[in-house]
Length: 183
Image (cartoon, rainbow, N blue to C red; front, top):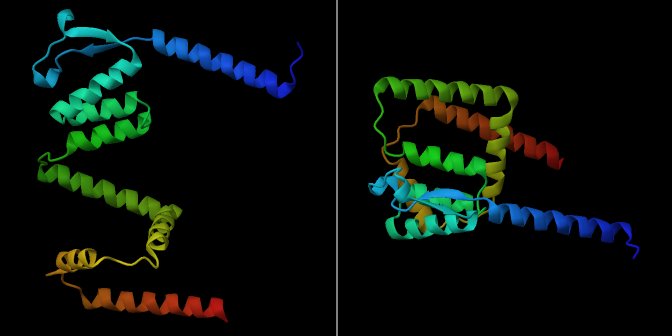
């Protein structure tokens, strides 16, 4: 039997998929029957071997029963709904949520954020990000609820004359650029 190049490629990729499925089915994960956050231990009697799919399902069930963010993150990552980087980002964000920080830590975080912003300004990343954001919102109607929430969040916010002048200059520059483009 002679196969053309596309048929041969399809046959080989089908074989690779079959091998990967066999490997995934033979790969076992160790799972705590009773999670550590509920008092479970690393004792062998509390551990069970599961396939990747079974492990994902176990974490889904635990998440639905207990609402623990670690189970949600594990379920999403093991089931392939999110990638490893996103799972790490999610885990780091959730682990720090609600933590009390010392004034020194807050100062360090602010300093790091300012350095990051300066770096992004220098390489143009910040402007591109802000432009994307403003263009994605351009022309969209805001709901009355959104406008009311925004207005309420601005109550008591003091706007300096310097800020007003900067806003006027920026608007004037933007209008001049648009006018130049139209002409």
